[in-house]
Image (cartoon, rainbow over all chains, first blue to last red; front, side, top):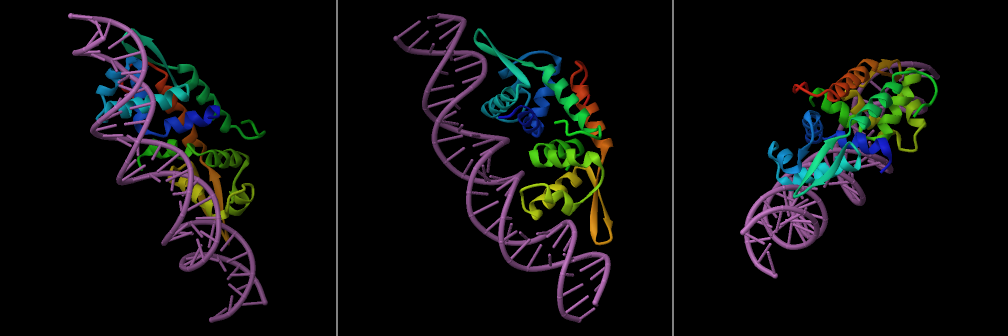
Amino acid sequence: MSGSNAVFRALADPTRREIVKLLRAGPMNSGDIAERFPSAWATISRHLAVLREADLISAERNGNSIRYELNATVLQELIEHIFDWTKKGADNA
Amino acid sequence: MSGSNAVFRALADPTRREIVKLLRAGPMNSGDIAERFPSAWATISRHLAVLREADLISAERNGNSIRYELNATVLQELIEHIFDWTKKGADNA
DNA sequence: TAGCTTATTAGCGCAATAGCTAAATAAATT
DNA sequence: AATTTATTTAGCTATTGCGCTAATAAGCTA
């Protein structure tokens, strides 16, 4: 999936945006994340996979559990991307 | 559809993002927009409706045709919205 | 009014996505 | 090795979303 498309698609879902916001505070385990949502663990796990594919978060195995961390860089790039849109002129992607 | 959710959903589609980018140069008729895409006019028209619902563009009847204009304010707000995510701390929406 | 132009809405098919439960994988523990 | 804990993958159903064609609406002009 091509770069920014995956990011936009990932952020189109409210639950996934909530996960992103949740991870601002710092890294969390998959289970700790899932606990905060009404959906089943497996459902959240799939959401995490989508965010991972978009590179919005990164996963790291930590013994038994898996630690998810927000990828602030990608958010920053997204902001710049949209910011470019607000400028008239050339066909800057 | 609640505010920012509509915006994120609208931008999740590549064609709709192209339309947004196209309108940076200035207002355009529905037909002139549609001509630039391989999809059928009706398909583009529906995309325009989605963007309109998200308030990313505004429509104005101009005699026979309808003029679409980019709503730069909403893009600006979106940037600020995402920017807030990059800050740790409180649960700022 | 009829007819042309411009644009949207309706209805259908198909592919993609979100949700669930159950099964599978992985690491730690006994 | 078998069990427990943590998480993902698989298989299913239901909903949503995109694109098409055909039909409808709104404005203009003869």
